[in-house]
Structures are given as structure tokens and as C-alpha cells.
Length: 231
Ligand code: C5J
Image 1 (cartoon, rainbow, N blue to C red):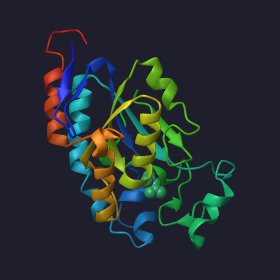
Image 2: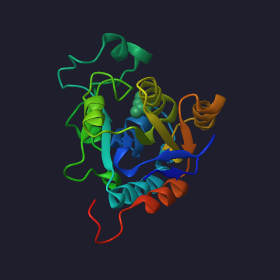
Image 3: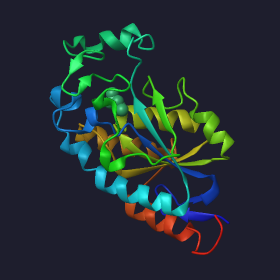
Image 4: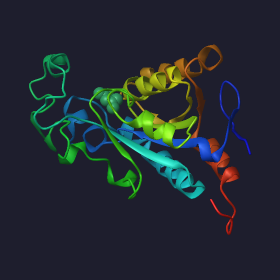
């Protein structure tokens, strides 16, 4: 039975069984004081504001029995999957692969690459390691979405204008309906946050829909199976 999320530019109809929650790159190196993001001079509190709302949406999605997936941006320790152009970008002295404040920067298995403990994946929740900004590029995300008959993706994570936007655009081109929760995504740049959100819902929802954690949770609570009912 279809339910609807209160969203902009208009309500988004969804079904519980064909909806997934995707939490993008909530990694220690991007969000924690002392990590790579802060080392580059960014104010991590702008990203950390999304943690509480993400926790509440994650709890509601788990309660409703949604497929929950997490992504991490990072590379193989030998950097064989890191394009030279990405490694060179910015001319950083301490860039990808270098020893940083939380281990080697954006390298799989290093402490800074891990998902923040507040949003730790539960056993059984797929964690998708990606080397690019988009979660569809060179990953098995699309296969898992297809195998689970997913059509609607609730999107949370960081950063709004980089990995969230790239993933939403990739998903949109593949025919998925994305609901981006504006208080569950974050940018180091307030103007990019505002414009990034506006771009998604402009022109009748050119890339998808925008809502808030509160409205998404209300929608998830409406669709959650009643106690005693089989999921
Ligand atoms: C960035 C990301 N900003 N997860 N990564 O480089 O958005």
C-alpha cells in the first residue's frame, strides 16, 4: 500500500518494501575534530549538526524494516584504485594516502575511514566502499538495490554538494526516486548547503525531493508494520 512523505516540491508516494535508507560517507575523517576535514581548515560542526537527525531517521528506518545501507569514500592501501588526477588535486602536502591525524587519509581500514560510532552500521546492513564521489560508480550498490526491488531512496550524509549530490544525480539517471533530508546532510560551506538543496527540488524536482528528518520519520512511522504483524 502506498504511503507519502511530506516533501518539496510535492509529496512523494512510497512503499515500505521498495524504499531504502542510504547514509553517505559519515566517516570520522570528514566529521570528527582532529580529522582530515578539520586539518584542511573546515568547520566540522557544520557537518556534525546532521548526526542527531541522521540517528533519529536511522532508528525509524530500522524500526520500519527498511533496507539500510551505508557508504564510505576511500581507497585500497596500495592506491591502485585512486586516479592520479584525484591524488594530485589540490596539491596537498598531506593528501589521500598520506599519514594523517587518524591514520592514512581515506584509506580503507584506517581509523579515519571508519563510520562515526553514532551511526555505526548494524550487522547485516550493507556497507559500500567507493573510490569515487558517486555511490554507483564502480560499486555493487545498483545490483543490491535491484535485488531488493528498491525504487525510492532516502538520502542522508556528507557532503551535500559533493558525494550526496553526485549520488543523487546518478540515482536519478537510473530511475530511482531520491528523498534528500536537508537536516541530515551537511556541507562545510553554508551557501553550498543551501544551493545544493535548492538544486535538487528545483524545476519540479529535477533531481528528486527534499524533506526533513521530522517529516521523514512521520512517514516511516505511518508505514511501520504494527506489532504482531509479519514484515
Ligand atoms: C568529499 C564527500 N567531500 N563524501 N567527499 O570529498 O563528499
